[in-house]
Length: 479
Image (cartoon, rainbow, N blue to C red):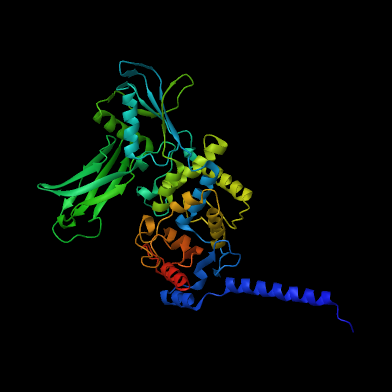
């Protein structure tokens, strides 16, 4: 019987195909012995962690363990928000806060209201707010015989979820987004010993924040980081009262509580009045919400720092409210006002579709990862990082990531595991969640995409990344 050569070629091709598929499946199914041992030593069930490690540009991963299982990614979700924003808006994009005058300005005095129209600027810190007010005075405005009108209508405040995961609404990381966000509405409450007992101060000293000092001074050892200090917040329509209580041993030294206790508009008004009067200006009225009328005069346009810089602040320091403001900005740019979080999510999803990125089981929620319902797979996150690696704005994006062992949220982790500056990792943590995602450059000049998503009850509130460090150590030992 004559054997046809085409049969042999087809059989050989089938053997090659089976071999490739077997190699791919092995990479997906087998966890290296050292990593399996590491999980066992740490008491981490293999089913509770997803790991994907692959060389940039390679089709087959080095390690792929449960890479398609949806997990809560915590703050590594910010990578999606920032990559999409860089692509859609460009790194030179700027927010522009507008100031309008409703009356007449003569000889330095405004007979009317000043309208502050928020643009959603995520990084309007106190130094930049001070600069805005200086610019107003440099243009001839000194005295305001009217109110401060705050226009935050660019974002739909009623559509923003203000519930917290941990029941701690005044923690700075839980600050809700706003189109008129100044200094994250953040105040330092400082308790320190004085010759006649103790004193309670605030920075900045905001007129709408009233402090009642009910702290009892006791002898003895310091009890924890906050020294037993408690805060009770009572909100009123035009001011907020904070009663500082508890027991304070002087052995605690100075105690600083960083909190966002004021509603956004109260904060803006209180800070505006304090800084304005410090500069020699005056404001006769109070504050209220409102908008500029069509005939009002645009007096000043104040640009933000560029988006490329904003993305760095978001990713290096894992700033939740900045990331949430960025998602709402995407919604506002594509849908107009008032922007809703779900519109921002839809904008990102459309962008993913145009890029050919299919992120299975994706649930962005608020774009910051600050949600129990947030979901992403390790493979989806790795595909996203590979897209960023080859994108037009790869340098801006990679520069935004924390340098492990050196800065940002990764400054105290992964030390000594990689050459200086060669390990760029975004971290993420919630109760029962620890995650990392980023790039590792090995001495053989290869760039590896690394994603580890751990969801397990063993991950307490302490920032323990020992499992992740073990995986990184293993990777570098291979190269």
